[in-house]
Amino acid sequence: MRNLAQTPFQSLIFGLILALLSIQIQAKEIEAKPMHYNMPSWFKSSFLDILADVDEARSAGKGLLIFFHLENCPFCAHLLKDNFTTGPNKEKIQRNFDVIGIDVKGDLPVVWVDGKTYTEKELAKKLGVFATPALFVLGPQHEVVKKVMGYKKPDEFMALLPFRKQ
Image 1: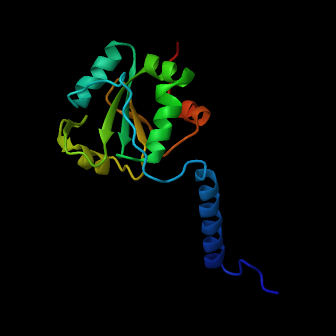
Image 2: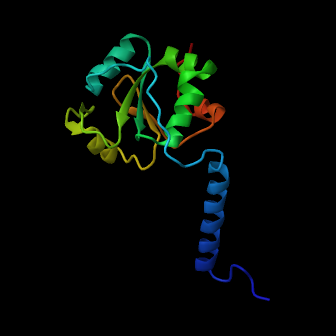
Image 3: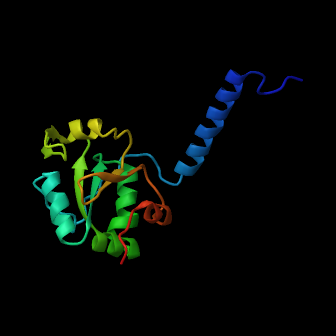
């Protein structure tokens, strides 16, 4: 009988297949079909001048969290529901961050921290957003301090966010 992984190439392919199956098993909890959602009413209304938004958040003792989303994305809908609209995660996020939503297919102009203006979709591409939802936390010096891609369960999501010392 032959060994399943005889060559390094076969071992790599076998490993990739196992990894993809593992991801599929974890993702099955959310059905990947279009799902309408609305941004929470407490998200910051912004002119999308990120430098100014970081400074406003800092003066309020908060960080800035940018929520990149895609219309009808079921993973965005679930992340919003599980973390931003109900429960203790909502209060903790609201207390520690100003949150701005940016549509990865949008055409609104956004002034990024480099001073250049991009459309929402250009900015998403520039920042390497390859999945939605994607969240970027900006620090007081206008730097990205954390990047979170994809849906995360509430406990895992909260553990990934950099909260300031209370």
